[in-house]
Image 1: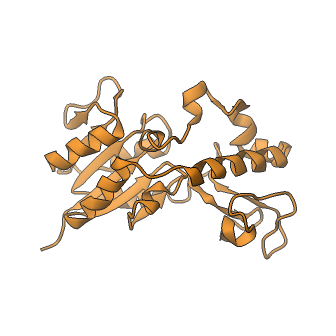
Image 2: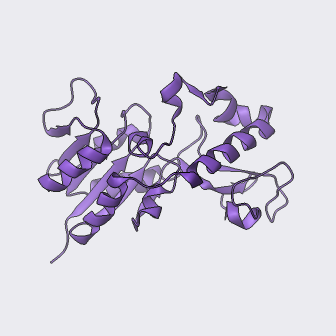
Length: 231
């Protein structure tokens, strides 16, 4: 018998319980940096050294972090469901917990890419032995400076069409730990089929949420525990 397709859309809230900070935690600041200085194309062009240092620091933080209970419960759901994860997060915690099908909308922190051809993508460990740092002078095989494999604010989201296609195939769609305020990712809800069951796990769900969405007002670890019981 074919397994039901469970599509899980995750945001910063699921990684927060692993100690991963987000810019929303500090009013638009990341480690005392303005978002426009470290997470935009303009910031990259103005001061690539600062941007590289910022993401080098984020990688060091990520390496020390560990997947939490919510990540592992999602992996276990693969036993009964055809699970596909769409994530706004750039960390690799889903993969480290064992999830086999993860689509990253906003890039991947542990990867870097060419500044002249976005298809030339490398694991950071291929470039630097310490597995975290990329510096000015580190170049791709085309000879261009490497940059974080991150979708900066204002850039196109290359995997968006793939995410939409996955969303349309869902028998069950679950949103975990996202404010649904970042577009175009938040628009995925517009592509859910009418027969699809929808769950939202967030301690502070948006106001005026549609009554056809089952809201679980909990942090990710508790909320996913309840989701497993409901499913």
